[in-house]
Length: 157
Image (cartoon, rainbow, N blue to C red; front, side, top):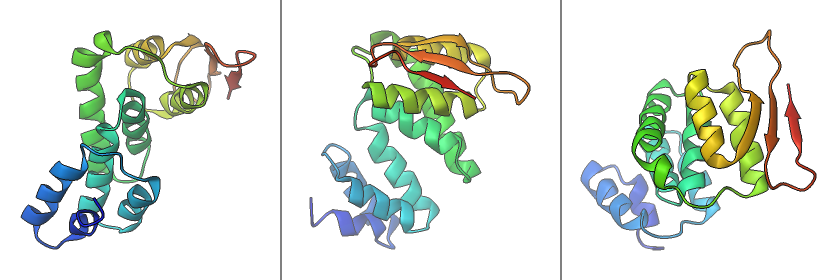
């Protein structure tokens, strides 16, 4: 893998895409993903997102929501498409739940997302986030309870 990582930033699209295909199936260290994010190119950010999307269900959901809330509108649209595809085709067969920390991050990202209320509720349900209100409005309160976390922590906004 050490030989493939530098190829992700290769100027040749074919070389970089080939490296991505091989790297996606492996556990990629967080510092490599941070390096791709920091590289500053749209392609490097797309590659980092793609690797995260292939690193487990809850990492995928977290990465998609984070990208949707980011500053890159093209990356946000790619992430939104992936998240909606998962919701339609993969959510029903998602086994297990995110760790309490992941669930809290997902809950916070859901609240800030541009998804519709129904989509936010469905994702929260699959993630095991008991939601009393999942709305995106400055005039409304967000109140989420993350199931399974010590003391059932509450997030308020």
